[in-house]
Amino acid sequence: MTRDEVVKKVNQILIEEFEIDEDSIDPTGNMIKTLGIDSLDLVDLVVLIEKNFGFKVINEHMANIKNLNDFYDYVTARAQ
Amino acid sequence: MNRVVITGMGIYSCIGKNIDEVKQSLYDGKSGIGIDPQRKEIGFRSSLTGIVERPDLKGVLHRRLRIGLAEQGEYAYVATDEALRMAGIDMEYLGNNEVGILYGNDSSAKAVIESVDIVREKKDTTLIGSGSIFQGMNSTVTMNLAVIYKLKGMNLTVSGACASGSHAIGLGYFLIRNGLQHMIICGGAQEVNPYSMGSFDALSAFSTRESAPHEASRPFDRSRDGLVPSGGAASVVLESYESAVRRGANIIAEVIGYGFSSNGDHISVPNIDGPVRSLKMALNDAGISPADIDYVNAHATSTPVGDKNEAEALAEVFGESRPYVTSTKSQTGHECWMAGASELIYSIIMMKNSFIASNLNYTEGDESSSKLNIPNKRVSKKINCFLSNSFGFGGTNATLIVKNI
Image (tube, rainbow over all chains, first blue to last red; front, side, top):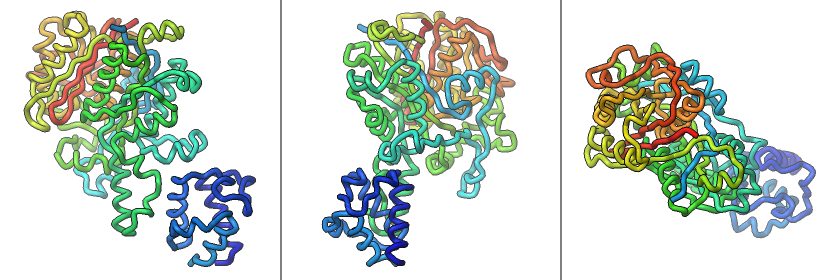
């Protein structure tokens, strides 16, 4: 899966599942603050990434992810 | 001691999704019973059920407030929203006052089953997601509604089997009467999905009259062959009379009596003594005599033994006064944890509109039900005071008495 495909799919999850306004998706902003998600939403993000990309997000890895660009890279490197 | 009144009601059931729809269905004698083909596919003895459509709350509630709601929580949200609107209560009022919630619920099977299925398949609990725990706990309705409405008072689920809704209202009545709360959202909710009813079906307690779903629930009738499971949710706003007057609220009715008892007997077979004690306690609490009751909304679920024993209990308590007795379960099926609350609302609707809905499918009584005054046609009747029974597994009994205002 290419990075562009991952970006498209992740954004689709954010819009459809987390009901985040498309305009508020800023790839360079702080991921949690920009998207307005909380710790429970991160639990659901793990589930949705597993369903859509076939791998399990490791909580410890999330500590190194500061913005959506980091997350897109993280998913692209692992997506099946 | 405070007087306790009802200033709002909301309902979501198989005979209507709001008070107006339910009022019409009661008046018309409409049945909400149908067939769920999936039940036969997964091994049910009976595929009969109340047919309840799930509300779509996407766009109504924010995702975080929505995903913790199990099916019955969605029903409860819709019912509570209607009740609060009727009572003239908004978020500003809820934010500035200690309003409580006491709701009857005694299972949340689907959420629990689905989460266990994920763990069995994935062998990883982190793939369950965040909503499951809040959907699967018995207190799912109260925990979610308390957050949605930012409630600051009593916050508790009442689990008393098929008397849960009645006990929730009765306990709310006690709290307000004794000055511990001035307003409580009370009610009952019941999931309808087949997973929640499989183990109940296993007891052969359900009617198998599948060829005629509208005739399957026939409380007190000689040819009854079991109950029909159903569900939804029902909410009332209970309030002290003083609070209602201070707010200028429209007072719908007054709760004047609550009785309760435990049979101390069999886990699933009801007796006569327990209900008699509950009925007498409620009448004593209300300070009225049996002759003051114009209408009895019976628990009668359409099971052979349950209806018979309730009929004997009613005959013993009411004797010659013989008030009208019906079971609205003839239209709705057995709404289980919700039933005490929904049947209070059905009765209030009939009281406010001066009619008693037909006890559907009552064609011939047995030796016990023949002692009662059971109409099988709608009756025009001015109701000043009614009594509502709810009984449950383990021998828990609840009786509520409500007066018109």
